[in-house]
Structure formats: C-alpha cells, structure tokens
Image 1 (cartoon, rainbow, N blue to C red):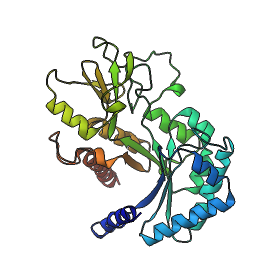
Image 2 (image 1 turned 30 degrees about the vertical axis):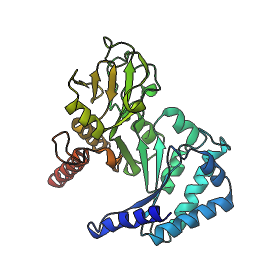
Image 3 (image 1 turned 180 degrees about the horizontal axis):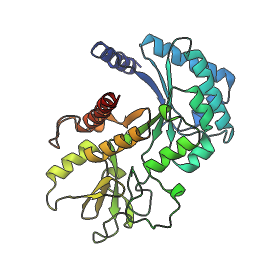
Length: 324
C-alpha cells in the first residue's frame, strides 16, 4: 500500500509543474472484471462504503475526481446480470451527488460494441450524471478473431463486402455515432485512441492482407505497445517488416512473414483527432502513455503520438479562434 500511495503523491505533484492539470483516481479495468463491481453496486450499504472510501483517497492525495472503469455491467463474471444496468445508474447518481459537494469530477469508461451498449448502459441516464464518458474505441478486432483486422479502424476498411450492414461494423465512426444516437451529448463524449496494437499469426505468409486467415495470436501474445513495435520496425531486417496502410479505414498495419500487426501511427492518430473535432466531441483520451515512443526509437521525437494529439487539438483551437 505504501508503494501505491507513494505513487499517488508523486503523480499529483505534477500539478506543481502544471497548475491547470486535473488528475483522476482510476478504479476497475479489464483485469478487475465485473464481479466485485456487480456485488458492490447491488447494495446500498456497499455503494456508500465505496463512495466514502474513494472520497477519502481523493481528498487525502489531492485528486480531482474519479474514473469508474466497470468492464462491464451485465457482462463477463457479473453475478447480478441484467440488474447491473440499473445498479450502475444508482452508483453513478450517488457518486455524483456526493462529489458535487466538493466540486469533484466523475467520468466513466464504456464499451464501443453494439451489444455492450444495449446490454450494459442506460446512455441518457449515464450522460446526465457524469462529466465525461470515455469511449474505448479500440479492441475492435484482435487475435481472438479468425482473420486479421484493425484494432481501431476509423472507417470501414479493406476486405469488407459492400452489403455489410453499417450498424454491425466494428469501426470508430460507427461506435461514436452509436453513442451519440443513443443519447450521449457530444460535449460529454471523449474518443479514446490506442497507443498499442494487436498481433496475429497468419496461416500463410502468401495471404497477408486485411481479413487474411490467422491461426491465433502473434508476437507478444497478441498485444504490442507502439514503442515496442517501433523497435521491431527499425531493428528487424532479415526479413524486414513491410508497412502498409488501409486507406479506407485510415490505419496502418505491418507484415513480416507470418507476423501481422494492427496499430496506430502519427497519421492515423491525427485523423482520429480530426474526426473527433468534426463531431464536436469533448476531446481525446489515450491508452496508454507508457507505450508511446518515449525513447524516440522511431525518430519522430519523444512521445510522438501524444505530441501529435496535442498539436492537432491546438491547431483546431487556433483555427476556431481565427474563424471567430
């Protein structure tokens, strides 16, 4: 616990360098699962205990609020099933009521898939009781599939038939539209972009495009940070990696023998920021900063993906000011 709280202190010391910085305590995530959240949200007593203990940490360590990452209500190892949806509403409502007393921020991270939106979330209610909603618009394809696919395609990409129903597409633009149409105001929706990729092992090196057959996960057991991929692209030359771009989906991918990687680069990140701006979204979040190229392996400077986001947002802000 001392290690954790020491990190809390060090993290919030960043405010001394950037006084406008707002920091949030994150709770949950993929590894946490749904069981404990489901049990807590189902009990008025446990909800109150959770809120009070979170408040204690937030105020002790100078956080500005909390990020609730229940992945996901009414899914995975949830013991309360469909009741999670209403219990999640109650949890967020009660947190917000308490946080309003102290001017604290409440955000939550949500899934992008159509079935998750339908089964897990009361979108208008959630939007009314949180400050921001982080849309996890990645993991839209991965080594769990039978064919290669993009981790976070902005639009419908190569290899998909024209007859495919748009509502079934696993793309960033469809996910955003789904949440907006379900009742989330654009000014509360934050587009999350990945600083990691997914890897696949091809069944044949000769069939290596988008939607090529795969036998399973590739290097790093299916996940690779952008920084790790940079190192591979620049050091593995026998054979070398071939970098390609799906111009329809607006994302890159890389191939080396039977190894296939879907990822985001500076151009695809900038395209996503431009899309978020065009939809008047609240902003952009990332997962996660530790897998940016912080050693400048790619030669684009330190933290090139994060810099690309900031530059794109600043350019958009400057453009709006000039228009006004």
